[in-house]
Every structure is written in structure tokens, then in C-alpha cells.
Image (cartoon, rainbow, N blue to C red; front, side, top):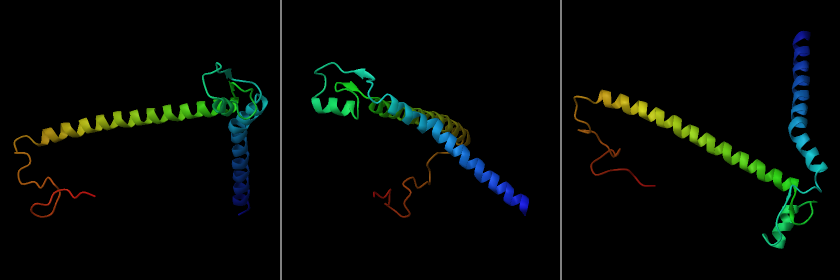
Length: 136
């Protein structure tokens, strides 16, 4: 009983410490860098390319007007990473489904030889005569 409680407390302590270290290693480092470089522009936007209010928003919170702040640049980079990840995941799903569908099509063609396809089958999925797919 004592060993079980000891193991449980060590496990909780380990989980708490690793969670804190993981947070500091990712978000804490990012916040520290954003605070340190808050007044440093990431790059300058040529004058006249964007209206004044857009230049203000791009420089928010403390970068010089007419520049892009590290906070806005971080948001833009995170958004691009999310979009690229979502596109890669969608492409992977589409490619894996295509291979799966090709495998199913090959099996279906092999099974269908020697019979007439579609005879006596209710393709529409309805139960009675004249019933087809029901629209929602």
C-alpha cells in the first residue's frame, strides 16, 4: 500500500514537472523572445503600400509604425504552418483513400465476372416502388 502511494506521488510529480518544462520550452521561450524583440521590426513595409490603420495593426503592439512586429509575424507564421499541415493531412487522406478505392474496385471487378451487374438490385436505396433517394 505504501509503495503504491509512493509510486502515485512520484508519477504525479513527474507529470507536473514535465508539463512545466514542456510549456517553458515551447510557449515560454516564444513569449520571452516576443517580449525581448517587441520594439524591433521584423521587416519594413514600403511607404504607401498599406493604409495607415493597417500599418498600425501590423506594428502592434510596440514596433515602429511602418514595420511588422514580431507578434504579428509569429501569428502569420503559425497560421501558415497550420495551413500547410492541414493541406498535407488532406493530401495524405486523399491519396490513401484513392489506393483503398482502387483496391476495392479491383476486388469488385474480380467478383462480378460471369453475372449481370445491377439486375434485380434496388440501386436507389428506397423500400418500395418509385422511391429513390430522399432529399434532405
